[in-house]
Length: 202
Image (cartoon, rainbow, N blue to C red; front, side, top):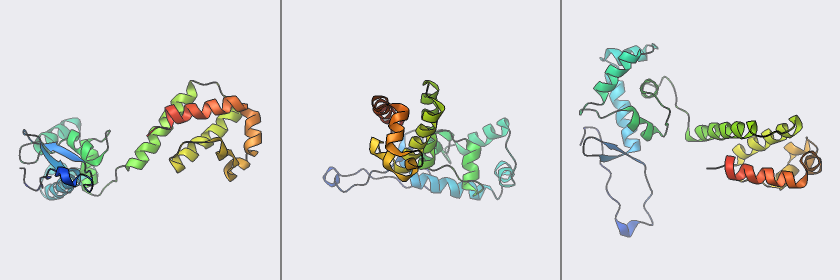
C-alpha cells in the first residue's frame, strides 16, 4: 500500500442498504482501491511538500508554465512506486476528465480551482444544445426562446414541459399563447420532447 493512503474496506452485503457509495481510484500494480477523497488529500499533501524542494513544482508555484518535456519528467517522478500519481488517476479522483498534470499541480498548490461537476455538466449541456441547434433551421425568434429554455433547464435540472412558458421569464416574450403562435403547437411539443430526450440528458 503506497504511503499516505487509506485502503477502502469492502462493504458487507448485509449493510448494503446503509452503505454510501464512494468513488475509488485504482493505484499500483495490484490495482488497490483508494477512496477518491483520500487520493486527492494525499496528492495535495505530496505536491505541497514537493513545492519546498522539487524545482519543477516550485516553478509552477511561482506562476510559470512547464514545458512538455518538464511535464513528462514530473509525470514520471510522480507516477513512480513511491507516489502512484498520474493524470488518469487524478482525472478520476477529481472527476475532471479533461484535466492535465499542470492543472492538478496548480489545484494542489491553491493556485487555481478546477470546475465543479455541476459546472462541467452545464458546459456539456450548452455544447450539446449548440450542436443540436446547428442541425435545425429555426427562425431567430424561435432560437431566442429556445436559448431561454436551455437556461431554464440548467437552472432547474428537470425536463421542460410546456407549462414553463407561463413563467415570468417567458411572459416577457408574450407567454404561452405567443410562443405557440411562433412555433405552432405540434412543433413546440415535438421540439421540447427532442430536447428532453437528446440534449437535456444526465
